[in-house]
Image (cartoon, rainbow, N blue to C red; front, side, top):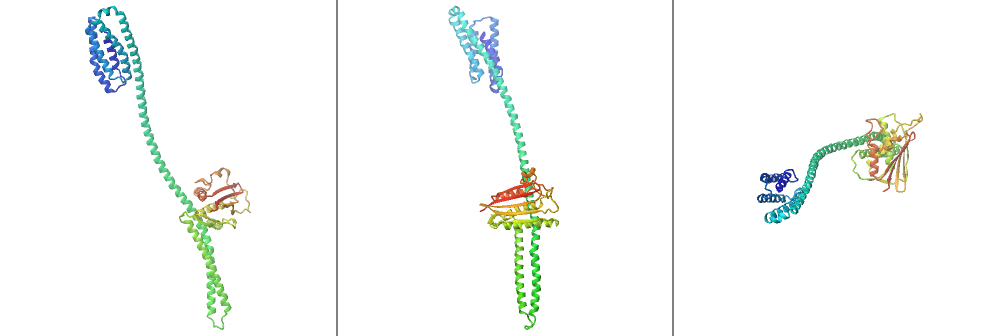
Length: 444
């Protein structure tokens, strides 16, 4: 009778959810259902007949228990079912051995009934202990399964969140790429605006500079025309009346005038060439250049460019050029832009707060040959640069000029160009005393 009760308890336990697949659980329930019904019927019949030792009941109990053990054996990889097998096998063996003894050796069974009952009780205790352990284990596994499902659900939620966040990040990345492209385009436009601004200032200075040699050409041309007219008049006279010495003097003057016209024409041509070099795209090729001549040229071009914009502008220009200056290889157009930007800033520096009526803006350009380097200094006597912005003057787009008056790229571009030439550019300034920019280039 105990076998049927134990079988029913085990089946009830198996009907609860254990850690096997859904298909396996459904199959297990379908298989143990007939065993459960058979155990119930036999248990009821055993109670009604009250025949504790009926061999027929013992045989059916053996068969039902054997079938159940066989079914459990097929699921032995499951921890809970393995525990149930360990719990059931001792009782299964002991109870069936006792049944066999009672059937075949009934007298021996009657004599040792107490001892055999102890074995059965021990096996039953073993069964109950393992069954309790299996129950706890099942609860733990169920809890672990619930945790696993919670973790899986959280992982799924996290995956969804990660995909959504990744999608957002990709969208932000695309927006940032577009923004960067727009900023690059804007920066290129600003750089081009800075170049065009410096070109405009240069063009104004060149226009003034080129006018000077053209005036000489025009004046000497007019004088030469008058001399030619005078020579022709002298040649039209009779041979006896002609003044040979006067003719020779006129011819000498004409030769000198033509030489001067040629000189100033070449000077105008050189100025135009400089303008074209500044305005065209740089080919990036370094050429040997006399920095003294280059600095002097851009000093005058800057001054006359500012004068062309504002006729009231006036300043003094000083130069201290080292006569031993060798030719230095630079990209003429780029380095000319560096000098023009710095010299323009020097001329446009505000007047110091302690200036008087006798104050005259003065820009001094100095060159010096050192051991392995050459130095170019551009100094003004303006108001100087305040301490709180000294660290910002080489930053792109930083400017102290009013909106629309400057892009803030002049000094930044100048700094980058000097660095690209392997040189250095430093600044020192004192308020109400002036500012000095010093460019150092290696001798190549």
